[in-house]
Amino acid sequence: MMHRLVGEARRRAAPVMAGGERWLSAAAEANRGRLEGKIALVTGGASGLGKAAAHEFIQEGAQAVILADINSELGPETARELGPKAHFVPCDVAVEDSVAAAVDAAVARHGRLDVMLNSAGVVGPLTPGTSQLACLDFAQFDAVMSVNVRGTLAGIKHATRVMAPPAGAGGGSILCMASISGVLGGLGTYPYSVSKFAIAGIVKAAAAELSRLGVRVNCISPYAVPTPMVVDQFSALLGGAADEAQVAAIIRGLGELRGATCEAVDIARAAVYLASDDAKYVSGHNLVVDGGFTSYKNMNLPFPTKPQE
Ligand SMILES: NC(=O)c1ccc[n+]([C@@H]2O[C@H](COP(=O)([O-])OP(=O)(O)OC[C@H]3O[C@@H](n4cnc5c(N)ncnc54)[C@H](O)[C@@H]3O)[C@@H](O)[C@H]2O)c1
Image 1: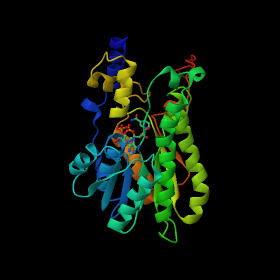
Image 2 (image 1 turned 135 degrees about the vertical axis):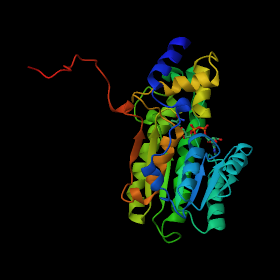
Image 3 (image 1 turned 90 degrees about the horizontal axis):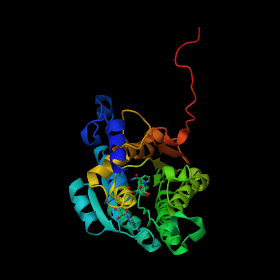
Image 4 (image 1 turned 180 degrees about the horizontal axis):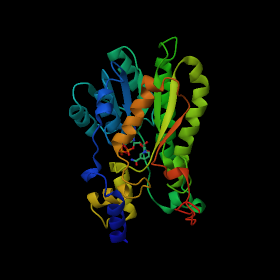
């Protein structure tokens, strides 16, 4: 099973550079500066997609990026790695006061908040209590919902408090990490999948009010990216039969889009787009970044490949 998965992963990912790296085209480099002077707060910014987005925000000219994360060891390390424009505040998004305090700290230090990315999330354990409805464990369900859904909602609430008039001037951009597990059923455990469907719904519900206040709110639904969260989950699925690099290769090989793999930077650039004025009329949107994965099912019909005579 392992050999088949690794072999298949290599075959599909072959045209991509080693490590899945991609460089910016000259045109993309020339387009840098799309977040010039912006103040951004990223929950879950210590790791994975939040960290990648924080990095891209800084590359795009952000004045400051606050990493709000529950991991008080990794958070300051990540801030040091990202440089002087990044700083860490401890924050547990499952606790509303903690989110409020992180937002208030950002405003106290920088005078305003322009971009809020709610990336903090957990996948929860993989047990019959999360993967089979008949034995659904509500304690495990509530634990995931309290971070992924309540945490995101708290982020939207407190960002709105400081972005929308009269406290703010409007014009802010709120982003949330949903998932392809919230686009199609069957891709995640019940708690995770339900939480991600909820995020796309929250964004639409919130856009109804926030549009009138001049604040945009959107979400991104990434395909699988080998961040610590997903590598750990796949390692558990594979029963520890693969090392980290093999697991990452398997994850990269699962996509549908030939010649490309889904990397953290792809999600980070989607976040830059939604945060920037390039998306100044985009709100209530779920930007699915999945190489087409959730767009279709294939029946492998024998469609003609040559023009008919
Ligand atoms: N990696 C993927 O393939 C993928 C795909 C779809 C969606 N997502 C979503 O992207 C987001 C980021 O995930 P990731 O893959 O970067 O995982 P990750 O584990 O690398 O990063 C998640 C971060 O959130 C932080 N966090 C967890 N609970 C928190 C809490 N209560 N308060 C504050 N911070 C908390 C963690 O400390 C960590 O730094 C999540 O919402 C996840 O569901 C990830």
